[in-house]
Image (cartoon, rainbow over all chains, first blue to last red; front, side):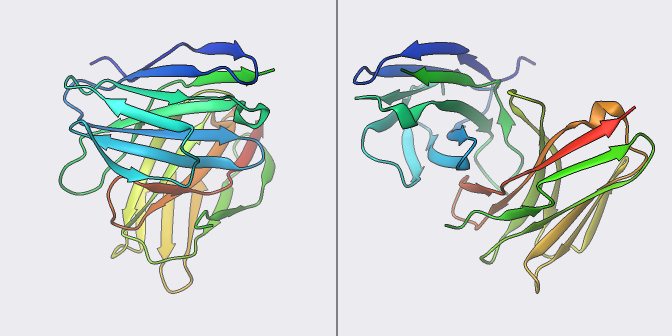
Length: 114
Length: 111
């Protein structure tokens, strides 16, 4: 079974630009969550999508948005990039139903904002 | 912030020794999980313990949970160089797949 796939793995942007990151979950998983990881703040929850609906949202500004498609693939977008948005963005998938279980993480997309 | 804290922040041991790391959290939880992260990579799930459980084992891993103290510990026995990684605890409060991760313990196992 293929794991969680995130693209791109690395990218460099400049302040003010926008970026779109993609995540393909494990087949059969309907929940996709996004996390931001930085040395200073650690792992911070961004949002979770389940069956194309945002089910949970973390405490991030509106510049951070996401969506989920009917095949469960998800994208997140960050507009008007700031230097502080430099981070490893991790996507995690899970079945999303029933008892809360483990998250399966992708390798992450490392974003550098110059 | 609901983020937990882990202690110690860094731990260095010899191969074959045991490693213990602790996690404290702030609110009532449904479950607590431990994850491992190799440098710059994604997280890998290690073990899940439910709020009504006190101890759980998986291979060389032993996890305890004390909900009255809002704390958990992860013990790795007979450590190996391949155990070198960062370890995170993660809690959920039963509001869906929203997890709060601890600050992590960086473990170095010296061959």
